[in-house]
Length: 349
Figure 1 (spheres, rainbow, N blue to C red):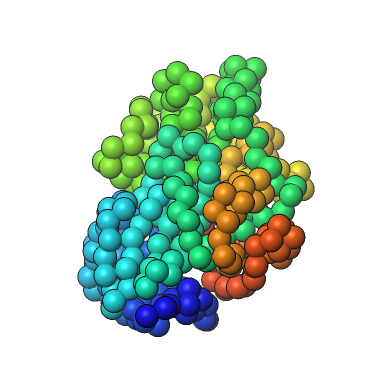
Figure 2: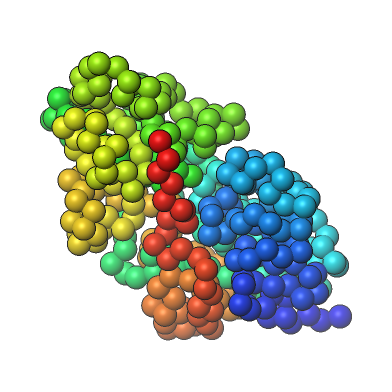
């Protein structure tokens, strides 16, 4: 029986639905059966009847939502296959955050790959993106404009370390989202040989502990809140690095750190107006999403029969694909974070 690949998955309100298997991929509302690509809150929601994901993503969801975040959970290792209603499903690395995966959906020789969120550059905290040939590639486009070309990670970390040595009496407060970005910044710092204690806002602690438990070493991490209880709080943080949610960069909490160099690790720091809006003194252009060159290079490498773009700067990527001989369409799915954070801005102490 010949299967048309476009019948395998259907873009509908609420996400991508597989009629033949009666399951959803990253649904935006509770459903009976969901395949989850990664643990960010705009893709991984609680309340599903059954969830299939990598063991790391399941652990992240349990840490965020509680052990009973779904009726049942099934862990699938990278490359392992599962049959759901006669549809073959496997997960392959997406390179986005720890446990992130692309969903490969197949039946009757037709194959659709859902990228979820992804990036192509090396990340010491997660498995690198694995390209899979397919009939339809369903991609994000968070940074799907030619202006977004992320610089090398090493250069951005070097900027942070240079500032630290230039201003040894100032605390460097780095805004980073609690899942993926915070751990990546820490791991990149450790790779340079930086072994001083790194202080964490309370919103970072749980997921950093989970990363460590899952085998990602992050070195000497200490709760900033504990240090704030000492009589010489501001002395403790002189010359130190503190990692906190972006929402804490300019609030009452951050004022207790003393003289601060405000930093923000995000792909959006390419846009100077965003840095000014956030009152960021040291923008760090570090993203967990593919930039324009990575998006276009991935499509060129895969040469899919069709490209579907879920969210972000869809039209530019669709236009590029069509110009380069790949039929493409924008799905304009609602419910995914187009700022690229994928996170609720957690700021609990």
